[in-house]
Length: 461
Ligand SMILES: [Zn+2]
Image (tube, rainbow, N blue to C red; front, side, top):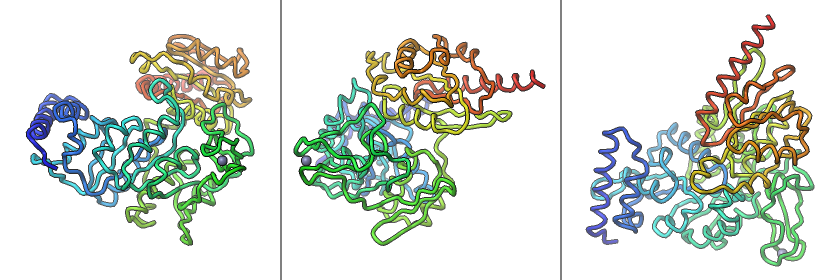
């Protein structure tokens, strides 16, 4: 493709801008790309890209999956570009491509790992053909931005290039059906003891057969629409899985991955089903680009699910666990609530699930709270729920609708003073569930709870 004058102005301007931003220690992961796209709207198409591109999209897990792929590749001495520290929309991806190219717009590296926001499909895929595109799952999320899953799966199907090989979650009947003409590889997890005959969740994004509209029959449900289903009237059904995780052994933290007649053992680094999916996704991608079981597993063992999403520490016999539970994202929240209720021992749950960041952007829709399984928090092992933040009253109403005893709920506007109400008697774990936009709050809350536990023990002694 002829690059043209505009392209070079965009490229050099962006490179110069990056230099200036770095000189003043400003974040240079978004604006250089934004500038380049402004000057040259088809910039992504014109810049030379690495020969192999792994793109990761989907509602939940894309950042974790990208981080793990990047860490394991790095550990095995692969060189590549990625948008780990940048944004996952067109401007962020453009910035990454610029930093990975020389002054003539030639790619400096052969491999790219890119997280791509689902809604950016129309702005990215017409200009960039991923070698592999991973779709982790598709759920309802941030209603105001994403509308519904048919809208998202529709734009993916429309814009994904025909040459791209898809790596799809075969346990997700929505994600597994995007771009049906493309070559595809499915990963999935074999039936688990915890799977059930009927769905416990409020939200289920596919109920009827997309071909003939007949009500689907679920062979089993894992959560929401994840599981195995078939249409009783036509041939629509969950796909055959190419990379199937089986023998999930939470005691020894191992799993077996079956691919045809090949069976390989891998280490599980988390017992949370969401992370088991992430691990299976990562292994499938890395196998696909040629890494061996040994290469993957040796590096996998060194991995930790990043601290910003999950942390746990013991203070005088009481555990403090912080867990990301994205507000506006009912499925992510429900998964965390499910994890909390099943966690052994008595606990206090602190909810800082404000969608304040969204509100600042003009979204004030709280419908997501009613798609979220707050009912899971109505559990005997949860002795107290503390809810605070700008939306504390909305949360209070929702908790009561879930049938939770008012006496268990402590609620007030100010987050830090709400913590003064914690009752630690007989408690084994304190969960702090927080949003992506409340990281600092989470850290301060964790410190305060630590001090409270220490003081309580000292007072007793
Ligand atoms: Zn059907």
